[in-house]
Length: 61
Image (cartoon, rainbow, N blue to C red; front, side):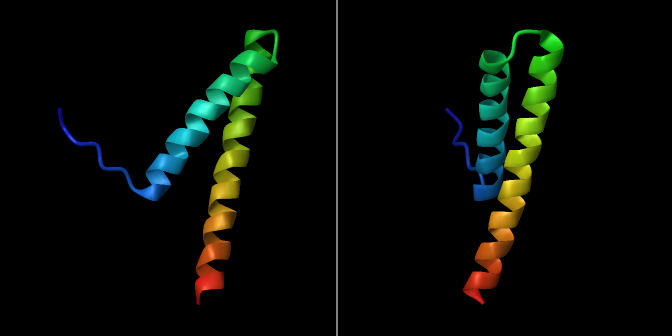
């Protein structure tokens, strides 16, 4: 079996993607609401990832 080597950023994006999909599916009633909420959650996760990365970068300097 090939070894899967992900960077921390890639792993965080996969977590954001899968979590957004699950939240979208279980949180809303219509397909349109699910898609909109899932995309919104992914955008929030991605923005949080970028902000946290910059905070760690400046905190480490």
